[in-house]
Structure formats: structure tokens, C-alpha cells
Image (cartoon, rainbow, N blue to C red; front, side, top):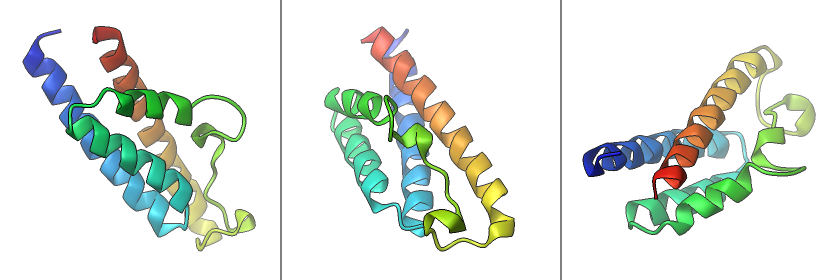
Length: 107
């Protein structure tokens, strides 16, 4: 991977993390928003620890992968909006995870 490609991937990852943080904060998921925000900050500072932080967020039980934004889970969301919100969250998680994996493999 060329240095410019890696820079572009980091910029794209930062944008996705920002969008995910906004979504999570909107629905009261401050813990996960904080983790992703810290990862974004580290990545923007050139600190590879941001990738490690992301990796840990996606693994195991109780991880970010398990999160569903639902009224039944205490989130301030309308039931008829849950599907759309969770589809967007799933897409963000998938793209964030893939970009982080790609960046780790090129490091």
C-alpha cells in the first residue's frame, strides 16, 4: 500500500468513527462512543494504538458487535426507527472493522 493510500484510509476511518460516535451518543451509548472517539483521536495523532483499541472493541462477548439500539434496551429511540438505525450501525461497524484490519495488515 502506498503512503497516500494509507493516509486516505486513515482519513476515511476517522470519518466513519466520527459518524459512529455521533450515532452512539445520540442514543445514549456513551461508553462505546468514548472508545471510538479515543481511537479516532489516536489515529489522527499517528498513534497505532488506535487500531489496537478498535480491535478490542470488536472482539468477544459484550463487544460493540453485540450492540443493538432498541427501545427495549433503554435507548431513546422509536420502535419504528430501530431497523434503520441498526442497519446503519451494522454498516458502520463493518466498514470500520474492515478498514482497521486493512491498516493493521499494512503496518
